Image (cartoon, rainbow, N blue to C red):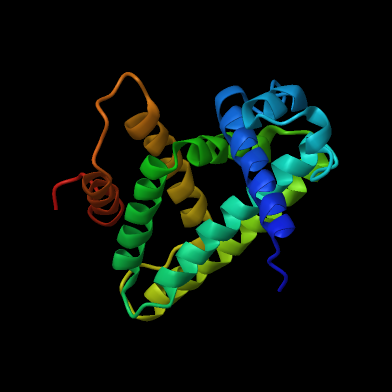
Length: 205
């Protein structure tokens, strides 16, 4: 693969544009962010943006693609380990929380993307998000089915559980790690808390 100085400069500029756009999308949302603002934050002229991307949609889709590919790769890593379903949930939740703390702009964009998935009327955006979302859904469903076969968990609808898990974890993460009304939480402690609630509940046995 070619790695000339020109290639390195091009890749650097592209990364700078994506990072600038990511932070703006996280802060202001997709619709309120303009190409002019992205160019200003990246410290490039607007014309430079068009050397790398067709439009704002193109930038958005590129970022979302990378985010979901990284998340799916993380799930696959834990899925391939010889661990039970409870440990899979614990490890993926812990890794997700730690990633959120270390990559706040990325995670805030993910949270906004989840809203887009359910409420956006733009078919192109929904299709891109849904495509990458389904990959992680399949990984989770496979681990659930394995857990049921091994007698680790009761028989449940895998898809409904994944939707429940995501609907619980991501809003919880937003409050505990990004809200100004709560003290910043510890990712390890919060992952243990979520996993304990899922598998043990709150009712006395």
